[in-house]
Image 1 (cartoon, rainbow, N blue to C red):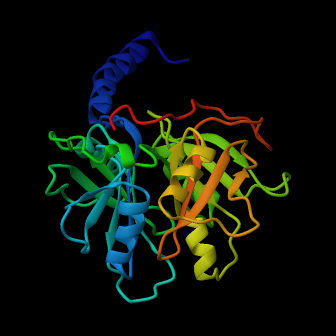
Image 2: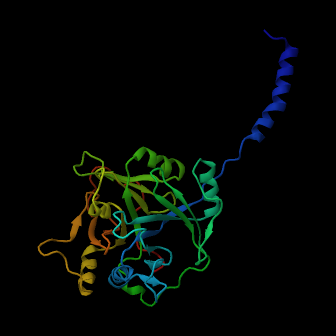
Image 3: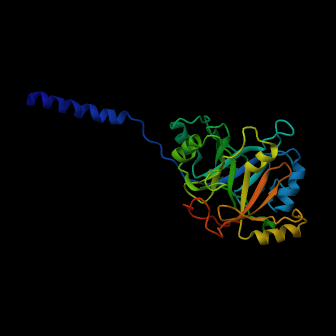
Length: 314
């Protein structure tokens, strides 16, 4: 046994060393709120043609209103939009460029991700609308953006009543490695499993990960072959505007000249228990209109989070 004198010396030494060690540890960087989908950027071969789809058929507000050129946006509400850009080469199979999420503090989130080993840019990008954003690659190289809205949101347009949906409630894309994506979305960003299922019901084809501070979600599309076709990619890499009723949606679409495939009911009950109606934009991207609330108990697993609803601001 050590003598009392030696023990007192050890205790006194540790009393000096331990506070220094604690002070030397890097302070933990808190993660700011991530509240929902901000926007989706898509490649479009013929932007004026896409303008007819997003602006005229869907009724979303075009910004700027006078020019259908790369960078044009179509707003579902004051902060959610689809942006169209020209592809690096015509006929590109993968039409998805960026999926973006809204955050309360882009700079704090940039620092948080950087402190947790994610490659982040040196500084934020300040856009023309005053929003502050940065772009990172997910573990499979997909571009993910985090955006903090500017101080001057868009005013409600006169055409707001023509919008077929005021809320883009989820987006989805091809995922090969669920474990890697879960580390990014769940472990780092705080997303949680909202629902998962498949067809047949003993297989997991679709995984919905809900944002930590809202009701929107990202959907992993796990079922694609190694070399998917343009149509398969267009279906998997998609966006989903929410509606109260797909039956009412179909009526409005038909009033605007849209026609369903003869002999086929476009209204479909998904295995997640929600009614949906799929459209396809001119470049093959699926726009999955989905009812906010389930009409049946979902297959495969229960919902674990709150259901979305229409946007409170047009």
